[in-house]
Image (cartoon, rainbow, N blue to C red; front, top):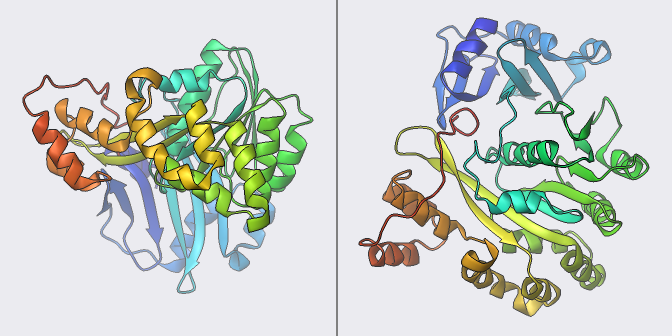
Amino acid sequence: MQELFKAAIERGASDIHIKTGDVIRARIYGELLPLTQQKLTADQVKAIALKLIPHERDRQFFDTLLDYDCSWGLPGVGRFRVNIFRQRGSPMVVMRVIPFEIPTIDDLGLPPIVKEIASRERGLILVTGVTGSGKSSTMAAMINWMNQHKRLHVVTLENPVEFLHRDNLCSISQRDIGTDTDTFVTGLRAVLRQDPDVILIGEMRDKVTIDTALKAAETGHLVISTLHTKNAVQTISRVIAVFDPNEQEMIRIRLSESLQAVISQRLISRVEGGRVAAMEIMPVTATIRDCIKDPNRLDEIFELVEEGKDHYGSQTFDQHLMELVNAGTVDFKVALSAANNPTDFDLKMNMLSGSQPARSGARELDNFYGS
């Protein structure tokens, strides 16, 4: 199995699927491909799963486990975020590959504004996107930048811990939910007594987590977290909608005062193989804060992000997609299918077809996004 995992990672796998009654499969450059020919029995999947579970107490109750998260490392190969679950009564394992190497902002080809966002001293930064869009890599790169440039105490709350950060200029305390603290909520309540400068929350799952994260941002900390939303406007709407109608006006005010930036991303196929992150980046300006407060002005935010590219470093998905196409990183048809407004995107690309190609800053990202 170890040789199999190693071979899968060398081929650029991002996920490995181990399922009762099926061959082992790996997601390579977005496609789920078979790695073996022999189908696994339930006992074989169980044996593999038991080797991945770190705690003896959990192994003893394996037959009663329905959903289980943990992390697992293979020396010299990589780390994995592991989810063990049941389907049709039989065990299955899905493993997300986590590289040993911590990515840098430059490695990921992220726009320079991300470094400026990572340098903020307080407030809330949200990294958003669907599952598997590279949010964890982007947050790890931001923490890595802090570790190289600032002297801070960074506390992370993760389920499970993914990238392993070494202390450099920063002291980085990584807490695994279920091992180092019971829940996100209890960990968040305790973290304010742990002298943090930066708090990373693996995911803002519910009203209590969002409220506690906002309180941490309001008391002078920098809070970084994720949401499963597609763009900046949807992110703001989702945070507000979590709260009861009678609380939403106050949440709008709190969010407008605390939110520093929203980074939304999607992975799309590169011309030369692998994938690259197309990003919408919204640094929060004074005008955007006014729009967050006023529910009737929320739709103005998209245009403000588009217009603020030169002055504030903001960008929409479509603006970044145009850069990626002009740089030859992404095929036009692929970008068109991923655009927020395909008709408008097609028109703008035709208007700019004779102009000098823009620089996207995108680099070979297969080690981080390529799977």
